[in-house]
Length: 630
Ligand code: SF4
Ligand code: MSK
Image 1 (tube, protein in one colour):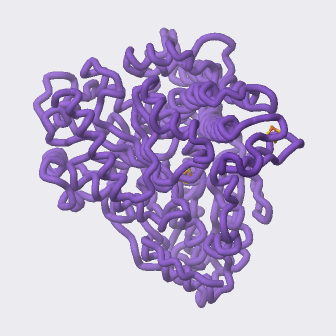
Image 2 (cartoon, rainbow, N blue to C red; image 1 turned 120 degrees about the vertical axis):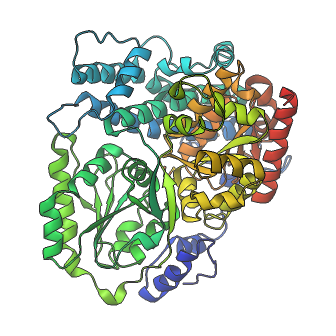
């Protein structure tokens, strides 16, 4: 097996070498075995949605098949494939949110799940016009949860959270008939429309994709974020550490990986049970060390400061350290390969969700009714596995960085209010933020989000691009694996202000914030939508008028396709560092990267070089500033 590819994150290099010695297979080996990618699939020109196919369309006109057996063109096929990614991504985020709403429906002041942020509960109850008179917290939580669950299947009306968008944006959605109705309906409807022999008009397929994606951003994801805050606490700024060096030699190390905070929150609680800590000591460890990965890692670091072991690409690396007693997973972004890899070590790979049973894993079903009990049992399994660790196989790269995490919208507003003298209530205004942007102290803002992708060096695009942006006085908010990349690179520290332009540096100093703000997991991109919309509303503008952009330098998942689509549908330009599989259709590519701007005031940019991408972002930000006359 060959591992010539040197990773940008140096902690990975030593572990790739170790994998070779241990005879362990990693994504690199599989990438080599995969050889060249399928050219048809890469361009979005392979259709296998019916059994007359698969049909492959030649990208060269006049050469090879130009239509599928049913007559579908390259435009139809590329648009349908893209749409189905949007539907799947929306389903994933929203089903996660549905689970959180169910957990809120179980809220009980004497039970496992209690309402943590009563203030936020009451605010949302007022926003959703819930009659709270004479009701206690649990009753209100149950009623609000029922209302949220109706958002998935209500027969009439549109998503409740749309009213958080600027009026102009709401009108655009109404005029285009893309206001999302019930979340499940949008997913089902898009799957129906892209069935064999249904919609073939690529532009209309994309409009339906926008509507479905909006059911994610302003529906499922926003419910996921808001309800998680209510149940588990609204994040506030706190310190943590990031990278594989957070795994500790003398501790029972447990990696939490996946997405759903209703599981990870209970694991955090169980890890604090004194008897379990005592048990860890009895087996010879100093204690229990919970570390996080991917978005579950983001959820628990934002609320508890749990250390971040790494992002998507490092899930195998963490096992390769030979020092993990258990990897506990729930849903999404989990390599099935982890089962085989953990067999090379003593690590127990424990899957917990009936939605994500994984071949070769130990399955211990997580049931919210017995949440703490199950998590206690899983942690016990991890502790008892400590004795099986083979110290000759342990190698923990001593690399980690400090980071400040936990910037919910509430925390951002509270901090930025110190920049200028605002006359208004600290907690209800984004005026200070818009003031520094209007004054030009900060040129604009970028939401840098998304995954890792072996098409580019691990974290290199994230870090290169973020550094370019802050150097040019663009404040960065980050979520998902991009946020973890920034944390590992030390960009979420106060010291990182030295990498900024003069304006942003001054803001960081006066406010006491790092130039890159950790805003959470992938569902928490709804926090970014909320923040941008508040600034637009405060200025009487639409989102598309603001010098703000979304960027996904290393994206890979269907969720990312749904996100990119709802971000442009919300009026915010989106820069993708990995070109989506649509380029076999010139028409569809032009629609996404040009023509769609006429309709929604924003478009996609595809740029794989992070330096050029940063330049294009700066050009676009300055163009928006010129148009505003600021
Ligand atoms: Fe081929 Fe049409 Fe069936 Fe797709 S839907 S596989 S293009 S026949
Ligand atoms: S976990 S979707 S790899 S950001 Fe949300 Fe990271 Fe991308 Fe998964």
